[in-house]
Image (tube, rainbow, N blue to C red; front, side):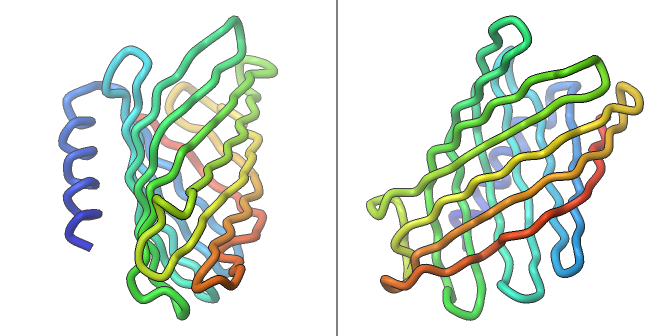
Length: 177
């Protein structure tokens, strides 16, 4: 836990000196998630967040990623440290490789997809593996606010048993400040 707190504090400290910061909040019947992201360089972003699911537990993450833009296409690659707490994992953490892709259909409507994978060598505690796939469609009302809907599937392998941590549709809002 202290390692994750330190990583989250470093990401937060490094991101507060730049102007573009945004917050996401996601909701569905049994889950709430909040994440903060900030530009820390021309093509680099730092983020951290917390997810709570009343059925499967909670997680805390910190991520650093870089982006490459080619015309309208944007490709992201990064690393994410995640700490999990749930009924099967008392204290498990992972370091994951994250890939993302975004495409703006119009000025207001955009699509984002991401995937992350944790090989067993980067999974600690009782976690053996971790992978996640997600996608969302976002509508930008103004330069400062957007709403979105999406789907995420997060799988953990805990003590050689596959475990579904998150497999839900969600709605949410994005605020830039």
